[in-house]
Every structure is written in structure tokens, then in C-alpha cells.
Length: 182
Image (cartoon, rainbow, N blue to C red):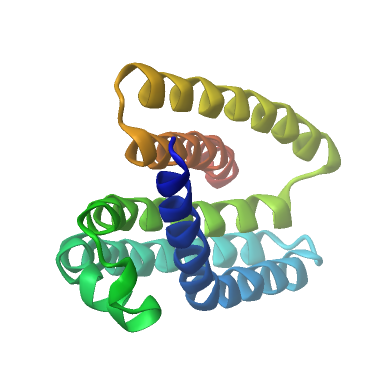
């Protein structure tokens, strides 16, 4: 990517992740603490309650994500001008922020799935998860390289690679959660 494209990605990544951290990080941390406290007793009723909390939180995130996907791309230019001024409101920044709006729901859902996983998983399961994370990093590098170099998607390719990475991580945690619910 060019230096300008890297600057645009840095701007979106920093401000976008700041907004998502402000909005979603307190929920994820509260979920971690809640689950750690709830599941420390080992009661099966508490596991059912934790699954119910996760399901309700997932539904809430899906509703919020649909609003982000529907309204984010069209209204992101106003938010960008408010946050950083009109200097950064070029066409390439606006096009990229529209694609970035599709990444935010994946980031949010992955956060609660991994919070749930990390609260419940044993040491061996976390070790296995870290091996998969290395594999997912390899997939991220490969897809980034292919999307940027061969499909010439530039920053959008990097964002799509992040979406693919987050999807793989959510699938891994989702399978773990599904095994727990049986």
C-alpha cells in the first residue's frame, strides 16, 4: 500500500478501534468477570445461565451490528468530519470507511465469543486455541497478500482479510461453545 493508504488505514484503525473499544470493551470485560465468578462454583445451572447470557448478548450485538451495517456506510462521512475534520474527508477515505463499517460487527462479535471462551476454557484448550490463532494469522497474511497484490484491493483488501480472520476466530469459539451446550 502507498504511504497515503497506510495513513488512511491507520486513521480508520485507530479511531475505529477506539470507538469499538469504548463501546464494546466494557461489555466484554463485564462478561469475562461475570462468567469467571458464575462458573467458579462448577454448578450446571450456572453454565446454562452463562449460555443464556451469551445468547442474549449475541442477539443484542447482531441487532446493533445490523444498524451499523445499514446506517454506517451512508453516515460515516458525518462521523469522520466530526472526529477528525474535513481535511481527511477525501473520497478514498470515505470509500474505505464504508468498507470498515462492515468489519466492526465481526470485531464486536469476536470479542464476546473469545471472552466467553477464555472464561471457560481449560489450559489445554487455550493452548490448542493459540495454535489455531497462529494458523489464522497465516491465513490473514496469505489473504492480505493475495487481496492487495493480485486483486489490487489495497486497504479494502486488508479490511476483508481482517473480516476473514475474525470469522475464523468466531467459528473456532462458536464450535467450542456449541460443544459446551450439548
